[in-house]
Amino acid sequence: LALRLDRACENAMRLATWLAAQPAVLAVHYPGLESHAQHEKAKRWFRAYGALMSFELKPGHDMLALLDALEIVIKSSHLGDNRTLAIPVAQTIFWEMGLEKRQRMGISESLVRLSVGIEDYDDLQADFAQALSKV
Image (cartoon, rainbow, N blue to C red; front, side):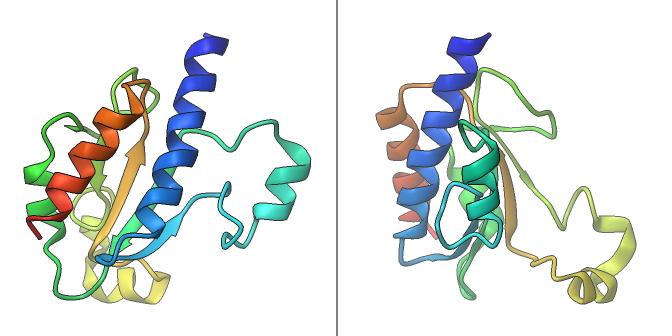
């Protein structure tokens, strides 16, 4: 279990860093990034930053098309799998509260939650690269 979690955390850190540098990505929410509001606390308290993150696309980029274009990443609401899982947050978890309440809570319509798995990192990054190229 420890080896699996180490790999997932490493993949998440690398993917968060890479996603943050992509032109179509507005924001990446991951405590391992220095830009995260809780980064310093997470750095003090934890050995790694976890395998969960979220990111938002810039306006004009179709988040659902991005998810459809992913070939390795599984569309699923589960967490902690060996495979990387993605879910469109506003359209699933927070759908019933409605657009206005989501906006008040700061939940972007383009927010994607990722539970990063233990795939080969290069394969994972390539999957996101090809999907981002289509949106």
